[in-house]
Amino acid sequence: MSFVDPAYPAFVTAVLALYALLGRRGRNLLLVAASALFYGWVHPWWVGLLAFSVVLDYGCGLGMVRRPEHRKAFLACSVVGNVTLLGVFNLGDLLPHAVVHGEGLVVAADVDLDRRGLGGGQRGQLLRPSAAARCQRVTTRSL
Image (cartoon, rainbow, N blue to C red; front, side, top):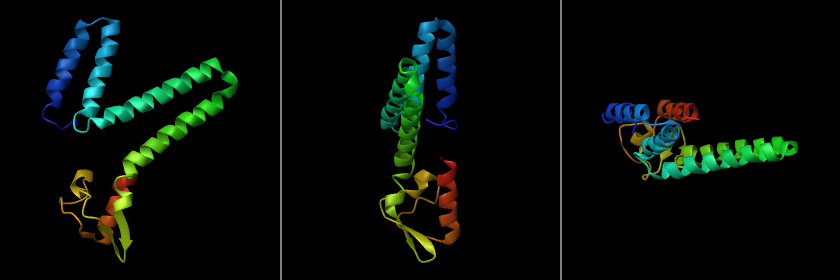
């Protein structure tokens, strides 16, 4: 689901109505469930990535509290883990399929450019330099 999805206003309305009716503990559980539903609406496996990041950060936070002398190591573990996750799953599906060729960027046939918002849904086309630069800008902005 995205903010422009027609189901989004109904989703937000339902979540806010339930939030107003629940107590503190119920509100927290509602927000966790609503977040998982929102992030997993199109790609359910994103919930697994989110859960991995939450567990990593929670574990590192506990480690910082229990072993204050190793705070920097736990912080580094959290940052490296999350940046790696971001790099692998944000750029990982585009970069292995792209090959710089002459003046443009050739994208393999199995990459859907329209999903990234980069083109008219055509597959395996030669992108001109301006489109290749646009590809780089979109990818950099999403980081």
